[in-house]
Image (cartoon, rainbow, N blue to C red):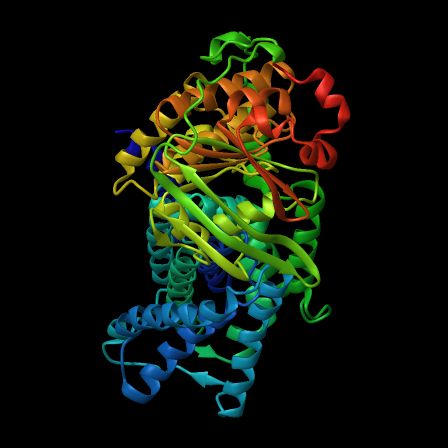
Length: 592
């Protein structure tokens, strides 16, 4: 019932637009009515890749043009109907997306955008070189409908609306699935998504393939509507710009954004081009340029998000929160953090063994021949001065860096050099020194992303996420958006996201950073509970008063090398540790 209710706005919009199009008799305005859903679909295809992953594409005309030429050449040379060729154009667009994505996803940021821009320009020149400057669809006098040729042009508008409706339903299905959650996670923080077990390259390839297929199909339909294609009209820069502009103007990362942008911008641009195009050539490009400028200045994420955020602020009721109600731990003074029952040294099965691990950056030896063992249910504290190589060591352990030499053995299996999502799947969870939340997603959705690495179904992922959220004490606020959380809540949410993947080992990188004394003690109590439940933990932290009561043993790094390893009482009194890290004042104030 809820699903049908959520579909109602889409159904109403489509029905009203169809009714309006049927009332239009002017042939030019009827063409404009057809172009609105055409460009909305093209914008949706762009949005499926760039809107949901954040990788800006200036080259979607490549897929659009491949589809357009496929339909035209299929009929010209093989007498194949567009009813047959448009699905084939979708397949060709998808293949083009996959072939383009494989090399291009190695690039990031503006390098990716510029590389994407090169593809349609290169194809444009190829088609001109082949002598395909202008190809016209042959007019069919007999059985014209079988070749998608109609004397009543309103039929084209209805077909375009049907395709738009289907594309919206497809986009909604993607958005609400594991597919969409993975893409949104990649957009908001690709490193965190990879660390949470998402194979970012595989999901991006799926996205560009589906995006290319949609663009190819609508490119083929566009050729049928215009009856003629030229390289400039389907591969030109303005074509890619229109897809980008309608999506960005209306709102990226939402099904309504490209539709809103197309409904507003396409009639405006086409009408001005008809009225003033002869006096002001290129006025369409000016309109799209002004639209982008307005979006950047007034609504960087588009009209949809601007209106939605404004509406939420107006309708949001003030909430009185009892700070103690949301926590299942009790804050205590820093010097009263309870001692963790110490284990006998060397007991428990070895879960992680590191042997002679090294990594250099040019002449800087960030990690030098580091070796240690991490045992089941042990908490290992990794300490040292700034620049000692602690975070670099973590990045080597969970795949963000490849070691120059050495081994990382997880349950005896060599894992050095594996990718972060592979190490997450193998059982290594990770939090970050600089928090990496998915800010526009709720706590629950953030943690569900972490659960996908273990869950085969969405229901199982939600169950694992709910359990992880409960373990860190955030169940009462699980529906809140991550961008609205305090530092402590964000730290606990990241911990829950790592827990949702059911890791064998947790790597906690300065989990107490940015927290007050009471907040730090609450997080420490959560970590202690996890250890009592059998979790194996390696933690980097500078809050030594809490650390000596939390950990079973210390690994002390200085200039990338291990200088001391052992139990807290011995390590914190070692002269080398005091000189390199703790300082002489520590001895006078050290807990006993």
